[in-house]
Amino acid sequence: MPVPDLVPAKGDDTSPPVHVAIIMDGNGRWAAARGLPRAEGHRRGVEALRKTVRASSDLGIQYLTIFSFSAENWTRPAQEINDLMTLVKRFVRDDLADLHKSGVRIRIIGDRTGLDSEITGLIAHAEMLTRENRKCTLCVAFNYGSRQEIARAARKLAEDSVSGNIDPSQIDAELLEAQLDTAGIPDPDLVIRTSGEQRLSNFLLWQAAYAEFVFMPIYWPDFDRAALEEAIEEFHRRERRFGGVNARAGN
Image (cartoon, rainbow, N blue to C red; front, side, top):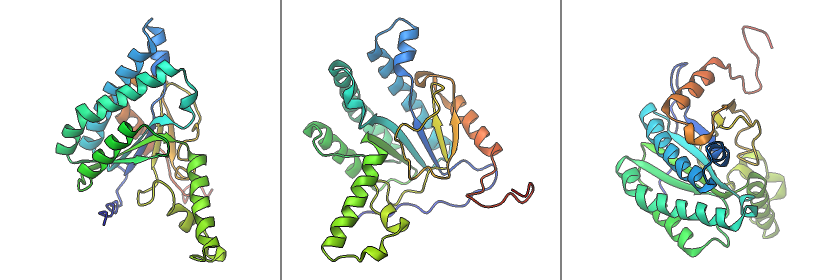
């Protein structure tokens, strides 16, 4: 039986966000600006990821979700996809032991159908090895697309309905949410995107309904602890109402 996720404690105005999600954008443009191959941008992006995982754990962030490879990324050139897959495998092999030792739990979201068996084996091993860890959860969105995720959840509910396991009248937001890849994980409080682009790109569309968004003008390989702290400072300047009323402003 899987161990249930921690119930996040309600923080004060200075506590870190419980869940930070990051769209790690700009590796290729970082490399191009320096006359380097795109593969070098992706390699430096992995280094930035290592720094960010450590910083998140140090700052008390309980959940860090990263958009590592989207369902749409398969349309990229074959050589770039091969470079990215090599980096994914190397990251798991080289960093898993340190992440486990640091109390980081790994969870993968996304469609695993049709993935290379070596990739799926590494994913399963990482999740199994770290399943009891509770200091921080690193949620990796791999072969992930939010529209596809929602469609899979809806299809599962439709199948359950046809088989008589549920009545269609019972289907609500809570029931659909329980079928999402992120079931059991709190919604992100803060979504960060690097590179200056200001869009979600099919990332956590359902889960980010009430998240705060911070778009940073730096490319992902330049992201570090200072950039994370800057984004969190901006998060604390926001007033989150979740559709309610601002008591001070009356709106």
